Length: 271
Length: 339
Image (cartoon, rainbow over all chains, first blue to last red; front, side, top):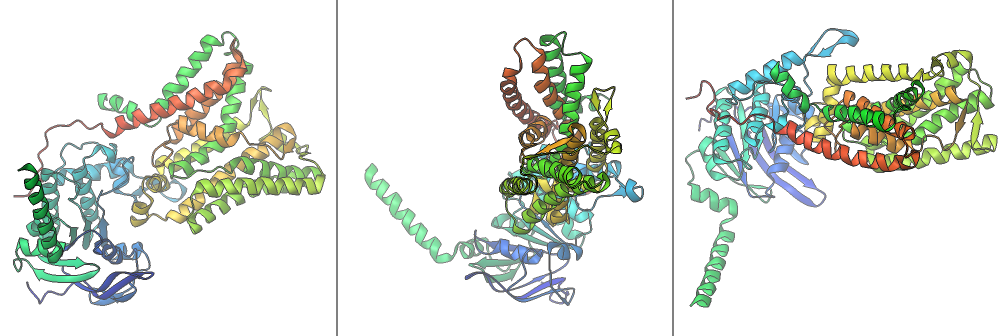
């Protein structure tokens, strides 16, 4: 990997504790523009906490965050989004009962008119959302008044990414975007991730699907029990090495032995 | 054009519209010839107008995913403040009436602050607040006038405005309800605040992440709810010339019923002002219409109960219709310009 590129954002020795529970221990990461950083880890490894630190929901207990080479402190998610850090959650845009046009612009509503007659520009919102959806390959959407809930999971995920890109995200944090999706829809989402990357956006992809990570990732970090267990560039590890690492190698061996003994007993019973 | 027509059943107010038409013709048939009379019509229009003043702000609270169970007590508190200051202490109405309005508005604001600061469910906060307010006005009223009610003869300008009647039958509250309807429809359909309210009800976390000032908006909504109750409270004094400590108790549930009939989802995130207006009309037609029938008012609660259950069922199916409405055509998944 090109070491000379300046990281857009870097975490230095970040720890986060909740009471006596240490969710993150001394984690350092670099996020580069135009690259996909994959955060891998089992459930409870600290991925969600790390995202929340990145997106300003939680302040770190210790450690520094640098953005564009300068130390920053997020008081709220608003501070982070002000810098162009945009988070898309698993169910991507959860306003199922809002129209596409309205939900696309929540918090950043286009208005026309002045003073007390300043009003939400529904026509503009609907036109933009349809344009964006078409560009993102969701061609069946032609009416911005449709409810978000009428989209499939993959389409909602794609449109949420499209929203972040439209509003000029510099860092796109994707929390398990493909977890609930079928193969075709996941492929669609991965393709949109690649598009975002080629636009120079820094993508942080949180997933426990190693195949998806290997497909789009440039750089990988594996979290285990809140600690960064490994950190490597594309091609430096095999799929098996990564899977073993994520599951915790020893635990996997134990499980295999246990399963072997179980099938053994079943065989004995059958015999 | 056809597309527009097809989308009508998907609007949140559609079920409420069908419901209002249905109950009107239902009572036109069973209540003939009494129901269409001017006096009976005025009866249900008045009930609908009074209810709408309280229900419309509550509808916004409910669209944002909260409940307000303190409106009943707020109505009594505002009415009693106005009646005590005007009737007992003899203050002029230009002081007593705004003080009444301020009382309910303040308690609404307090609800909002407690709910957003302590992050407790609005159900339990407003329930507690309801008892708190009612206990407070009961104690204060007993202490001052040794009674549970207070008469007040409103000034002429009050009688001519909110206390007035059109053709001696229709209340001026109808005008107030129309103003409320217009303002709230404007907010919901035409401003970004409407968008915020729907988003908060849809998913508070995501709304906050998208930059919506969730706390401020929530406080504003509860304040508005308190204001609606206060307007209704002072209106009752203006109309009937007295205030009771126990006033407004039935309004807590009537408003929720009207709002739900109007298509607002109890969990928030869905609903429309037009639907709520239709919901108050439907509710008003049922409670007044049943007295025009042969079987009489004894059955009105039963009919309301059936109506609520039907409304919930209808809303549920209409919502599903709205969510699943895009035709499944074979889509080309590849985005434009990708290789």
